[in-house]
Amino acid sequence: MLNKYKTQNSRARSWLRKITETPRALWIRNALCSLCLLALFAVASPAATLPPWSEGHLDIHHINTGFGESAFYILPDGTSLLVDAGVSNAKRPWRAEARPDASRSAGEYLARYILRALDGAPAKTIHYAMLSHFHEDHMGAVNKKTPDSRTGPYKASGITEIPDFVPIAKIIDGLYPDYDGPGGPWHDPKMNNYEKFLKWQMKNKGLAAERFKVGVNNQIVLLNAPQKYPGFEIRNLAARGVVWTGKDGQTRDVFAGVPDNQKRENKSSIAFRLTYGKFKWFTGGDLDCRGVDTIPDLTPDIETAVAEICGHVDAMKANHHGNYDANSVALLRLLSPRAIVIDTWGASQPCMNIWRRLKDKSVWPGPRDIFATNVMPATALALHDEAAEVHSHVVIRVAPGGDSYTIYRVRDTDEKGVIETATGPISCGQ
Image 1: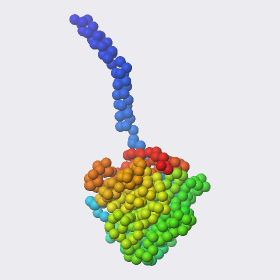
Image 2 (image 1 turned 45 degrees about the vertical axis):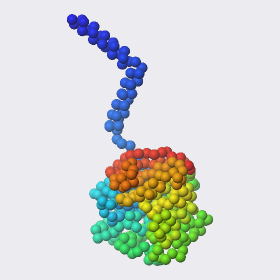
Image 3 (image 1 turned 90 degrees about the horizontal axis):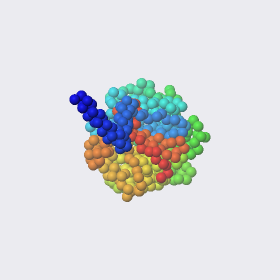
Image 4 (image 1 turned 180 degrees about the horizontal axis):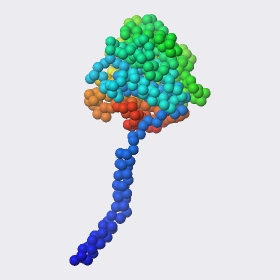
């Protein structure tokens, strides 16, 4: 009986080998083993993080704190530029959740992000800081609860809190030093505080301040090795309604004849075009198209005037957080970007009509990728686009020489710099 069982077992093993060692079975077995190994590796290995900036690259970081807009640039030779440091007074649930959390102020988190981004750079200094315009979600709100600065005799919010952690060498805005002149912003706590900040920092910390000079290409320049990057330029396109004509440093005042009380702050935003090799980038603060395809407005169309002089770009920051009154058809057709970043932090951003316009290939042809920093769940429902519900930092990294770029979504719920998605490399000049 025992020999009979042995014979049967031997026959079973032989039959099993025949069906499991066929070429097809071996291929399936090897594939399953590979998948198991990949799964084990994914579990055991740490998530990929964004590598530090290195010389020759151009980085544009759109930092999501949930409070406003801020972009940090590291230029090819390590020169750094901060554009806006917004902290809005808006409350939850209209405003997005604080990122990564509410244990620190938005200004401190911005500064910590900047310091990490500068890990590979020559110096942990902000060489240039720029305010696109004077709204709290771009410069920082001030109220009775705003804490005092750790550095000087002023309140710490947004741009005025950054030097508590990382020094700023020069600040540029659209009005310095005449904040009381025609067309200037109303005087309120944030503006009074900003002026105190400037005066104290200039006297005690060596801060330099300048008014943005429309039409020039030598105000924001490479400071470390400009001779190595002759194909780099930042061209100042517009500010306070004044727009470059395209000829040398000549300008024209689009707001000429408009009463001061009609000169809207959003339409007064700073705009510039950055060129690095074949790569071209546009940013225009909160420029809007009121009076063109939205509600009536006495101020002339500034978006089209700026877009006409800018021309086609590879990528752009959407104007005014993708709100209903910006990013006109004319602007989008003239710029025809391959990639668009929308700095969003509120429930109405981006607006449904703008979201659809950005995706509509009848507005301009060709592929495009759209990256919003913070689309809230209810906003995604209103957009009828579940895929739009996302929040992250968005980083554009241009390869040395400016021939291609990659766009990264970087996790914003901690400070580890974990890459969530990577799109690219995308060839420039398409």
